[in-house]
Length: 334
Ligand code: PPS
Image (cartoon, rainbow, N blue to C red; front, top):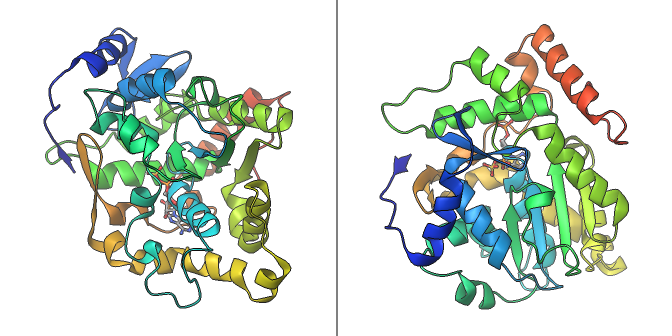
């Protein structure tokens, strides 16, 4: 990973950078400091763009916002939703020219904060206005800090979460893989303690999940709550539900023709990993360059067992269970 120049402060963005730098800071998991905003810990680099998007992004009723904690399956969800929504435009079965076979899901479904990070002199309105509907955008933002225009716009929000133990293990591997040259990864035991204390990207993870869970219960037509484990267990069934939720259900003809299965196959880890852009390409955010291959590792449920002890697992499960008590959401220990 390369950390580049800041690109220079300017009127629009510097206001948010000033606000970000006034927030409480601490060293967290990984190589950037974290800032605390309304009870959540944000990687410092993403704080200003998140605040800028919160204030200035204008949601369309047709927008689809994909929300996740990092390492919960974001890349997979981006690919699946892209495949579902654009299936009418691109041949799926054996379609060698599908955009998912030429570009990373992160290019096809951009993170909102990255658009803001790249266009610092003004909100990226021309880019956003130029995106055809339905616009597919991703965030890691907690529900309460989503752009103010999102709730009430009628747009769809799809939230995907994952067993926090697997999220932690995936995150620790990712941070190790993308760390700037010469820097150290937070030692494993220390990283785990920070994660359990909620000082992880967009953590505490349990509050992040609870925020979206509550909204999905209150507004099921607008917020869909998914779990990585369920997606793994029944990918085709979940993709069909996803299409219904997004207002583009698979027709009987498509079901008979195996289109949901074709979308799932196109987005499988092995297929995605074999795509040149994902194998050899680089994802450039405003300031970071990340090798795309870092987004594809094992994609397994329960990989934590190979990395954390039963005692550590028990500790994290208990914290999550305790924090989610009364919310109606149960994640720990499944
Ligand atoms: S990021 O940085 O937030 O966008 O990362 P994210 O995509 O959320 O998480 C990466 C983990 O998701 C796994 N992955 C997949 N699983 C199943 N199917 C597909 N297609 C897929 N693509 C990525 C990836 O391997 C990471 O999980 P781990 O456990 O580290 O393998």
